[in-house]
Length: 117
Image (tube, rainbow, N blue to C red; front, top):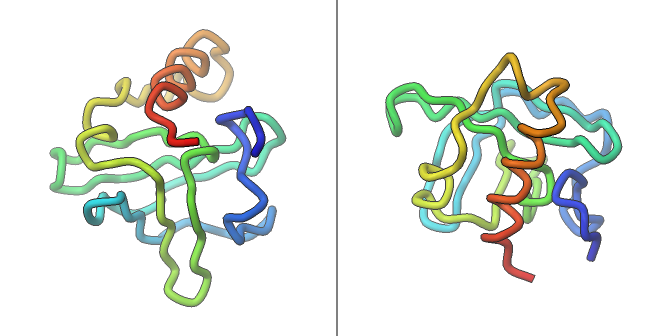
């Protein structure tokens, strides 16, 4: 298993370059929303999930290392987190997430601490 929270695990079934926008995202205890944006960049892969009404239209940044499985047929992504863990995550900042190393470190540390190995 890779140590990087910002990379997809080889077992997820995700192929770099696949458009994941619109895929539903499932936590271990239920649906959390749909993919609004994503990146397959090496060491910086992530999903931005629009949670809709679940947490009042909030967007969350999920590092690719939180993805358990990508089901292409069902257009669903399963993450290895609970809804509560996602709800309590650092707030998504659309201006910082693209190039702020400190922000990535903060988000990565949060999810790394909730990772099941």
